[in-house]
Length: 330
Image 1: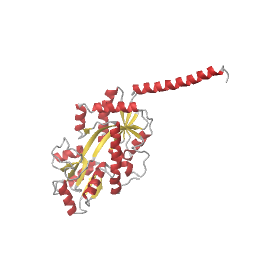
Image 2: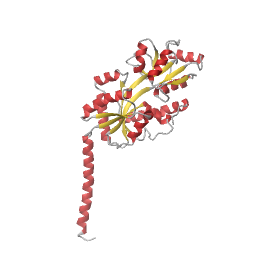
Image 3: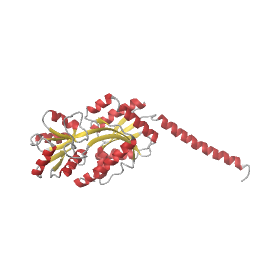
Image 4: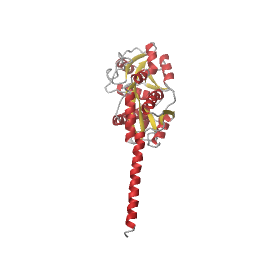
């Protein structure tokens, strides 16, 4: 190599290095400035549902905390699979995130074909809230405790039916888990939503149901339904006198509807940490906790790693319940 070419090559190498350094600097600056434009928060259910309402409460807080609009985008369909698949394929820059629910963990086993892996195609941000389910029965059923319900079902095999808001929902799976753990022969009757299921439960067409507390509790208070237990490990603040399933003899029976935020895998760690910190800060606000409490929800602060471990435990935990139930969707 001639002496004349050496300086030129040095300049080229130096220029490339400077470009790489500049790119890293711009990337770091962009991440530090995040968010510098509106963020889409995708929800896999229609507006007005529990997932949507809880997501909107959090989106409002993130907008105030981070200075950019967090805009809810509803993409219902496929039991939330359409939204989940959409976000899995989105650019991992933090500007498209998913407000995920327990349904997605169940869907990993329930659906024959899904185009995403909840534990591999996403980076967890934070678990925002849990909503306890409650075991409710028609008051004409002559039982006043979970154990009495089990005994009554065993004395009347095949004669009791439990309702759900649809096959494969967390409400359905809670009933299947109870059926399996109790060793009872009861019929599952799926409905298109909780409202018609509760109507038939009140009317006596079905005998019991595991439902989200917000939709059932007014009927318990009016005497149209009788509550036997909540499905969380701790008693509900909304019903402190109501025992848990665990207290009723069902060890480790922890079935909640839960809601949190995840982002496409590859989203920068700095962005994940910023979102996590903002969500957890929102959960320190009394007004947010009060808004959640009005829905029967309980705020849940986690690190991204804790939420990731929780998601995996939910996917793994629901798989055998779904398989044993025989529920399947193509």
